[in-house]
Image 1 (cartoon, rainbow, N blue to C red):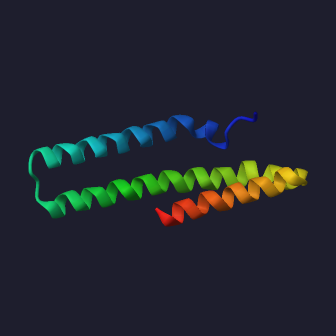
Image 2: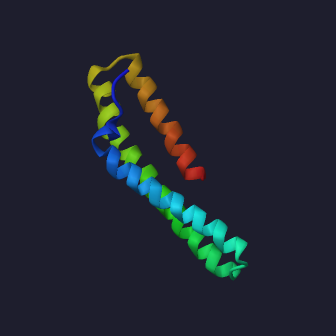
Length: 95
């Protein structure tokens, strides 16, 4: 198995995910403390955008590394990588 495209940015990705984890804990705390609904919704929106940014970064890396390498080699694995990327994009768009 080849190494993931994001491996060179792994540390930055982990830091972003830790910040998002903190945002989610903050949301739980807001609910525990009976914060105003709109304030919670604003934070949910910010957390969602942060996750979407991570997803887009991973998708960009996947397309430029994994998919482009498969396309250069050609054959059934290229078709499989393109289909896999299409499905990932569909899932992201639906979320």
